Length: 154
Image (cartoon, rainbow, N blue to C red):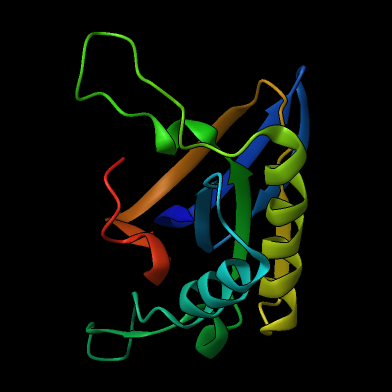
């Protein structure tokens, strides 16, 4: 499992011109599910995201988490995080999970974030064409992979 976490002042996602999810201060999480990911990856990743110390404390140091400050998360599925661009000009998505595998794990990840104590978790629409807007705060952008997949090539 891979996520791209962006610290945001605000973020929203639209499908067919309708806002389906939006948050204020917190994170935008772009989530990619691999073909061999399991529910344990969801739990690990949700705890990691919820506890990442990427928000400033009183001295301006990145020492606060979503949980510390009661912040929000917008989660958008993005299979293209598993695009392998090493050969040719067209990315290969052979390591991305098929929709019937990815969607339940995407939904589970969102629930795990809630269960971890994230105050508000909004979602995109799995498999839809989405327009994502954000105010990147910092900017702070982090790439996180679940431990079982860190060493695997894209």
